[in-house]
Image (cartoon, rainbow, N blue to C red; front, side):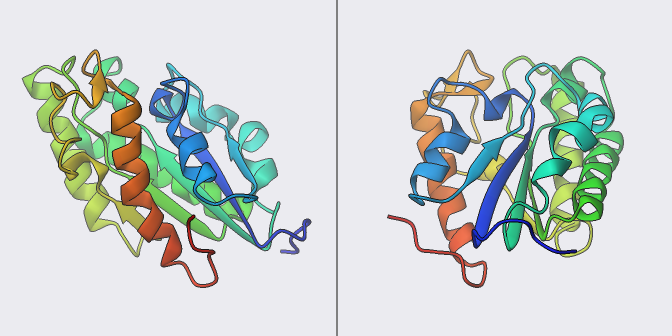
Length: 196
């Protein structure tokens, strides 16, 4: 498929509210680490992977050919666990379906992030989150090109830490931890520029 733009890379963020809150969002902060890098945040708060799948073609797919190398970063699963009470297997399957949509649309690299803990999960929901994360991690190199286990990053593994606002969304300090985790992942992509 022919890429439409001259830019070498574009970062496209999909998923749920962790990509939207706080005001200085994780996508914005990560993109700032690579000045001049085109990026788009297509996350929709309060949605599940099922909801996002219904709008993927109009919301995310148009960016699939916006650079010579297009990188899609999916972060979600919280609404699936908390509202839909999905099992870990279902959350994983929905994330895989999202990755298939991304590859089919033309994204070159699909990065999945594990689901962070949250104080709002009950014991069953948290166990399902852990199951989903284990399946996500095991799917690196098959369903996902890259998996980043943000849920086990020190400081992000405890929702009662100062890195979460209300035990669910990242604070600015939490965002900084995610960005620090993601920078070397992106820099390892052949040809990707170094962060500043």
